[in-house]
Length: 302
Image 1 (cartoon, rainbow, N blue to C red):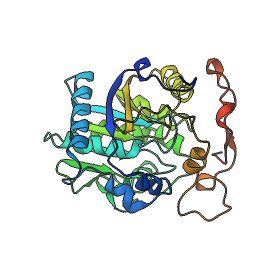
Image 2 (spheres, rainbow, N blue to C red; image 1 turned 180 degrees about the vertical axis):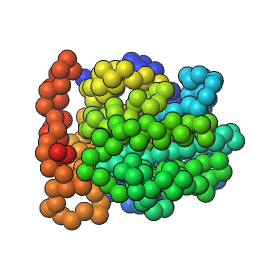
Image 3 (cartoon, rainbow, N blue to C red; image 1 turned 90 degrees about the vertical axis):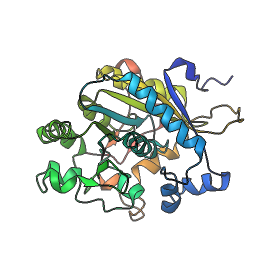
Image 4 (cartoon, one colour; image 1 turned 135 degrees about the horizontal axis):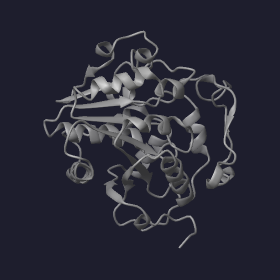
């Protein structure tokens, strides 16, 4: 067994989410085809085994959470392009099918995906509320799915982690938990930015998405270290993109994932990193050691 191969028995695995796409479409997904990405959102035409996998995941999560009050769950991943946003939305849709009032919030203020998945305008959204430009009533919108509302990320700000840590964010969550049964936060990859740690104080627990044949154990270990250091409860892992009958080993993470996260599909060639923010992110992280094997987190936030 390869050194970097994931043994999912190391972690509490909530569920495997099967792949329902052909290999040529997998390649198409990697180049950020927007129409294809929206095809991955649960709907009446989704394969039965995919829908059942999300229902099983829903059941496992319900048993992992207390039965009283609004349940708040963050969905994240160790690295980029592992399917956290799609899985977060599909989870929210599945919970809404129980006739529960569900809200999903795009807390990835650097590389938002929810608006694209729902095919809606990204602004006004969370960032617009947090800086005082819009009210909560203006940013909470109803989706086409019964019982599911959403807040998109809004305009990309220069200070996302500060906004997520702000009193305005705390007040918003306090207000929303009185209006909804479940709130899902789509948060950035843990190993790339600190935003998920900042947002984790608002939730009861975090679900980690790992991509078959992509996520390696060192990335998972580092992400767990970050969350444990912050005192965040990890509810478990979801192994995404499982192809049944495929016994291939997990391959090492591709460094291009960092480029894909810090690159915007609409940004001009040659601009500085994600949203044009300078600086760097990476190096050594206390007891969790050096993360240099994954390269420098360049072109990121001052």
